[in-house]
Length: 311
Length: 311
Image 1 (cartoon, rainbow over the protein chains, first blue to last red):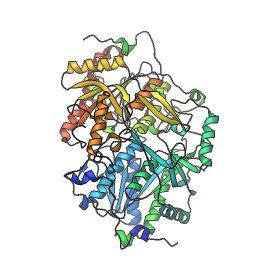
Image 2: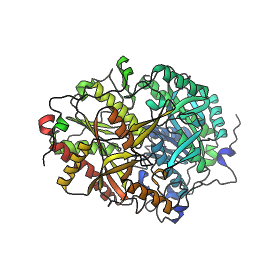
Image 3: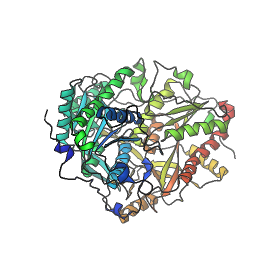
Image 4: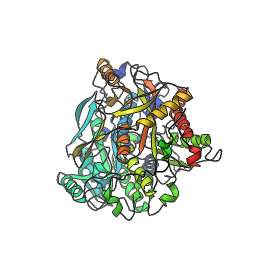
């Protein structure tokens, strides 16, 4: 396999974080409240200046497992090493680091990942990081896919299948693009083919504000539609190109876009929503499914000049 | 002080959870995935049937602190007792119980609390609980209030100051009421007067989908407006009756309404947003502020026939 490593290493050029906020320059100190970190109390360039690859995901324990896994697989840490939580001063998010890899949890839903991304982007900016790639790994509901399939997001779409993220700023609706890096998605797809252990597709990902009614489930505390209406909605989603549903990709894509950061979303599907709503696979099966995006990222990181550029 | 305890104890009548979902009756088993609990594996009536009061809040450690505090203050548990996390099988939410009091974390933002509430309401329904009161305790940004003030929510309003919660179901926009229990708010206000340790007001609470741009902050990674526009927006919010801003109250009110559960929102303000955006008070001051809603709930629970009805 021949990968265009320049996409990752950017030899000869430095792509710094593009901060879309002129006010920050005027602040003497910046407190990243939800990380319990601040420029007045922490030396960001010393702590984070070498970061090149950030992996984010919902669950704190999964992000700890990821840093341990990637450290071992890439030979970046000592075997058996316990990585401390950099955000130990708060229980809002958890953050782990080994070499140039940062692993950060973001909780569930657009608002939760949005707070984390505001503070992460500022952290990378204050640390003067360059040539950053951020990848979200997560779980999702699949549409028309065998459970355990991995979806690399082509476009993140909203609950009406539009590739956009709508938010209210100062009481007015603002619409932002949810494009993701095409080349990065292709590289990840190529890695999956080489691993050849699980089904992987590139498809659209629908990002919703609710897990139950917002995703057409029949098993929430509130449900005022019937099974036929649900299936019609999911089939419309499928016909528009949607292959999985989760709750963070749209704001993730929009914020990475605006900040000039390469980004991808890689989610495993825990069930096929055309066949049900409940996540009823055994604990062991679900654990194995959740390792699949991690395997894909390991393969991608390893190929992408880790030893040349990271070491 | 004379409180109408019948509002809490409902002597002589049983108000069960109103489940707005006819599909659930047909399910043999219900897996509450994000709690790692299920009706097939756990005896809900035995575990939770005596619950009368549920306290919810964003942070898992604060909800653990709350159960320890309320157990000690109400004489419900053994001194020094360590309360186990009932949701130990997952790191999505944390749940603690002592006697009739349940304490559950919900993470940050509408989607995160919405998942938790769907599963909590189903849990209480499956456990055949009756006469439930749910109170959210949290942190918020105040408008025109001295930091540390506590706001008891009269109405939860959206980012355009409307008392409603808008969500997309099967691709269509649905609007729900965000009314909260007036009598319960008054009782809580009365308790605060009796404690007489901190400023408390009843006011509207604005619920947003974002902490930075969505609340008019100038210190996020993205900010495309100026200070004047920000202050104009916050002053309009104040003039419409808003006294604090947080990220969960609208869906909380809407879902409790639909499920026939008495509900209140009690948040401390960590700063006055007319004077800044960063949360820069010392750790100790912030810790003390966050205990204020807990003190209020303790006082309310104690007064409300705890010993008569709970013991």
